[in-house]
Image 1 (cartoon, helix red, strand yellow):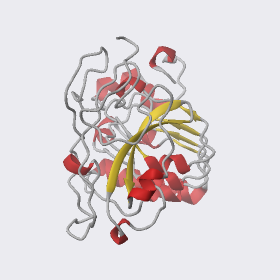
Image 2 (tube, rainbow, N blue to C red; image 1 turned 120 degrees about the vertical axis):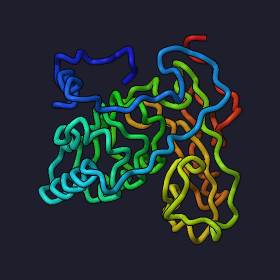
Image 3 (spheres, one colour; image 1 turned 135 degrees about the vertical axis):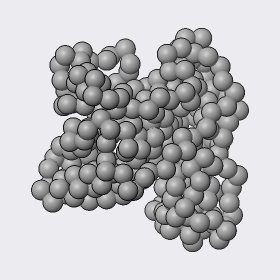
Image 4 (cartoon, rainbow, N blue to C red; image 1 turned 60 degrees about the vertical axis):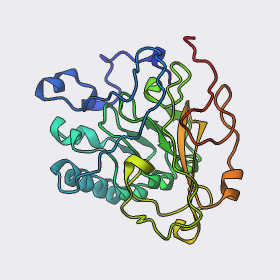
Length: 269
């Protein structure tokens, strides 16, 4: 869904997280100044959000419980943020790997989240048909593994918040050079400022353990359900990068490393 198609908020499609009265009890999101999401302003460089998830935060502990409950009862719709207070929502900057257990969920609702990244385990949510991260303004990219959700046909993303979006064409963070070996990397404790993530376990493309190969990070923009999303690929080899599909129409056509890369003109140019 594009931003011009914003639903009227008096029709509460996403539960309590879209209730404006919650803002009176405290903001649910932190500010984001990565790039101007309202107008086209050329910017030479952007970076990744550097926040790490505080595993001791009450909001995170509450979220873990909610994932466990959803996995146990086999629900088809999962709206975890409606169960968290505004303060708890601000404490959650990613989702736990345990979302891989939500194999019955058909609709994942993350309206108004404070997320800065989604874990690759979303690719294990094989029943997912609809994904709603709408108004998650700090969520600028998604893991390539989301393409494994073969049934996903509907999405509602705030497109102006995405790297490389067709409205504003903000740049992509520059990715690290190819690592022929990961022997010197602590794959369980990566610096998100450099790598975008805090851990990498398996190749985004072939699903083989990254520890057995190298690390080739690239960006690719693909249509996923309703929206074109910027996807971060953590590949184990050049062959896996070569196996990636071409980019979406009117986006960069090949995998790239971000930074100073030519993009098509924005809709507002």
